[in-house]
Amino acid sequence: MTYKPFDLSGKVALITGGNGGIGLGMAEAIAASGGDVAIWGTNEEKNEKAAAKLKAYGGKVLTRRVDVTQEKEVVDGMVATAKEMGRIDSVFANAGVGYGAPSFLDITTEIYRKTLAVNLDGVFWTMREAARHMTERAKAGDKSGGSIVGVASLAAIEGAARNQAYAATKGAVISMVKSTAVEFARYGVRANAILPGWIATDMTAGAQAAPAFAEKVIPRVPARRWGQPEDFGGVAVYLTSTASSYHSGDTFVIDGAYSIF
Image (cartoon, rainbow, N blue to C red; front, top):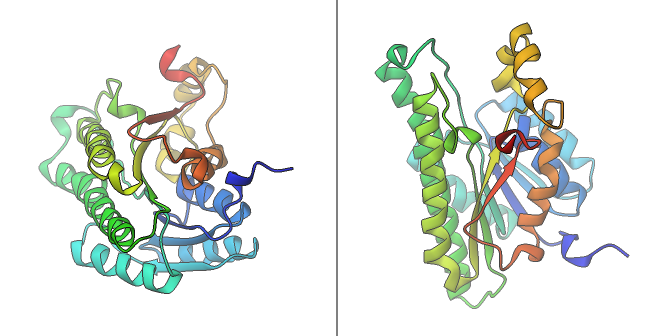
């Protein structure tokens, strides 16, 4: 018999940046476990392709074009998504960007601001509006709680040379998650962070194509391979499920043991 808390029937998950990469990997696992899924993304063609994949699991699927750098779009999107889906039980603030540079000295103010706009402002507004929805539901008598997840990065806890802007945003996500976990625990709302390591997605396409990276970095991953989007399915199901109802304020490092080697 399947462990019942991992049956997500009746649960609704929202994943920003859910039309590809880690976001889609999480969305697919949730859908496969019986949950309904809403995904936000700015590329409508990718949204439609992701929706087709998710609908194959039989649950309800919603896609919405939301630019998380625009506060009003996030606020309106959360209200509209909750209305159409009936509720939102878990929110994964996953949308993110990464802009590399030859050196810290070459990171322009424009790159810095663009990185903060998606990785920090977008996560801030997404988490704030998720907390608003979940606490309003709790105050109305719904005791089912909720789960808010910020997707950070190993760059938040390790020295990410030439990536100071990105690292700053990801470190901030962890702090935001901890503050949220403490403030909203009384409403049954929990908050956690996921820290991916080297994962094969569009964002890391350049590194994947670099022979030096394949020769010098990936062999240092104890798992001896790139992480894949589907490697995040288990933690997404867990954090959406009631199995994690007392698990809050934590960081889930998913990196094939790279950070401890």
